[in-house]
Amino acid sequence: MISHAFIFARGGSKGLPRKNLKLLAGKPLIQYSIEIARQLDEIDRIFVSTEDEEIAEVSTSLGAELILRPKELSTDESPEWLAWQHAIEWVESRYDKFDEFISLPTTSPLRSKSDVQKAIKQRRKTTADSCVSISTSSKNPYFNMVKYDQEGYLELVSNHQELPIFCRQQAPEVFDITTVAYVTTPSFIVKNNSLFDGCITSISVPKERAVDIDDIYDFMFAETLVKGSQAC
Image (cartoon, rainbow, N blue to C red; front, side, top):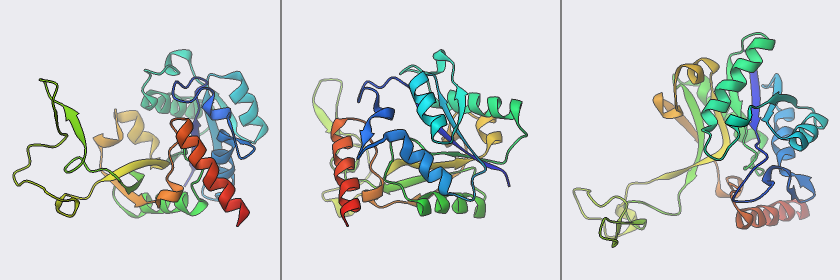
């Protein structure tokens, strides 16, 4: 089986400017994803898709191969799924077709090698189209998440369940999708518009490895965890 890792890293980021190159415990954030990919025997090639020259330079210096992403697929409004499709077309036009697509977003620097291996193994042993990583959510839309209604008053996100829910223990268990790993196939991505167009299986990742960096507070929390693990 031929498996390739893909890291999608735009130069722009509203939540945390230049996020993908920001130094986390002394290393550019993107380095964490590349280093994990290089540790995996299951991965044949590592590609970084970016429109940014500096990200491209750092990525290739760390051993990744560059996919130059078109500017129109690099905006805040661009669905990353289209960048996935572009990356597959780019790779298959230059190399042979491959069997497995593994996305390792830069925003999960605390993932472990075993997390990614478990996601790969889980997809391979099931009939699912894709495998994603999840962690138990600290908020629950059936109990303590709210939104504004048409009159501007608050209501539960899920306020139409048949039976009222008065405590967390009564609410259906929900999970956060983490960005630790996405594992699927090139053929599924090319033929569909979303992971949820197919059957999805999952692996569970503990919260200490499921940090997803969107803003400076996530970044500071991740840095605290990284430095803490290095001190042990």
